[in-house]
Image 1 (cartoon, one colour):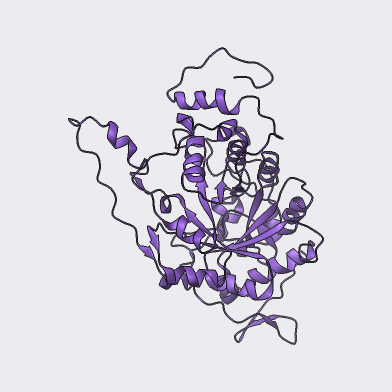
Image 2: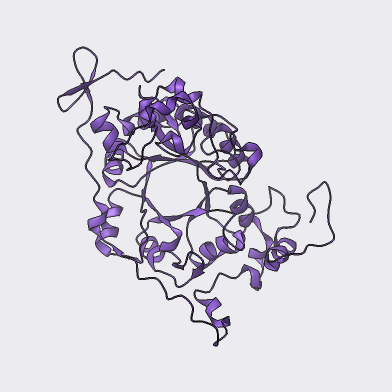
Length: 408
């Protein structure tokens, strides 16, 4: 309506709710406007809806757009260099398949049944020179291969020098395979790099969260540091048992769940109910962050965020578009005494009330998802810690590995 360069007199829209909320809630709100609601805006690979994920441009945009926390999914090169990438398979995050490096493609059943160019098969210089690729080329075609890959150390320095960020989130996955099969200690590399970047000696006030789907990894990190730990539940769940919650509390400060574990969907479109997972976790003093929020595939991104923040009371959104969630925090409609229609949470099964009785029967609700129990919490155990042989090589069990040059 008014972007500073021009304004229009009106819009024609299939979604009047968006334009109505824009006029009442979001017009003329500056970046320093008072926050109306408190929750964490956590990026997903930076502003990965606008730029290739885990690149300098994606992180810069996430900071500029008002993210509270930026994230790094840590991978390791062949010589043990930790860096940020949204996948251990570089075919999914870069243009590696269009280079001579495609000859390095291989199938590793422990990771995937599909062939991939894995990070630990390439040296850091080879990875650094790869062209990144945006996850959805239709999102921002002009920037679909822009930016460069960042090392974990660079990422940490960028975050530390930002005055607006409150913290960072580091994701650690495939640690068991890397330690057991490749002699690469991912958890140790993360902790060492955090220390090297000045995050463990009080020189920064940034909060540090380390996330994993493997409870064994978080237990190991908890023993070695005082960082916040975040347990990620990838599967859709309708409930969680008391014993599972008690187990999680032993090694985690927060939990990440996916959106259908809060508001179940039918055909990925219609909200059919609301679980008590968020309430149960928060009652046990566990923070709850939810992913993945996007601007596409929903009728209105603000309505969706509002349904999880105001409706479900989650503690943070994990989003590919931090700007949308950041603007939501400052919108004036949250400060009104009377809830405006377009700022009301979605009512589960509410749309079914408007269906003509003579219309064909709607699709049945999906079968209930499983209850998350303590059986699911236990992850594969980490192999013994790495140690050095007399000739300077890593030794794991009885197998020696090539020395890791962490400075390369």
